[in-house]
Length: 174
Image (cartoon, rainbow, N blue to C red; front, side, top):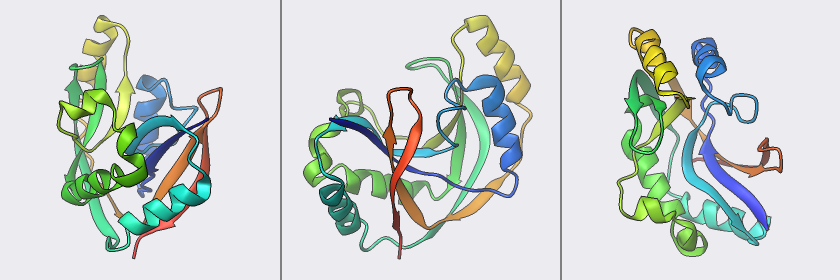
């Protein structure tokens, strides 16, 4: 069984700002680059070839698109998170997410996501302590930078036993 995740790894000219936030607040900063999750971590015996065929098929009519992220929202519905919000490109990401969770990936849609709406975002923090979380919210509330880029590929990562991200494949968008 291989643990995988399917993501977008956007690259911004001002990525340093995101990196600095994640250095302070995201425990996964040393394991995975800043990302937008499309398919949440799942364990399967699906071969790389079958997975690639599925992704290429469901994304065959998806073209590159612009994303713009701005504003950080505290989210506590399942932990103390800080989400960088997607302002432009949210609909495209939502469609890709829905398409990926069909066919061979349909059984891997998490139970918690069956009763909730998927909200595309980039996680920039997960803070354990409530006190530290409140302090982090105050520190990031005035960050109003805009992060823009073109999404032109979707990546599949393997999550190794140390929780490190190893890129298995990248599928280019039209």
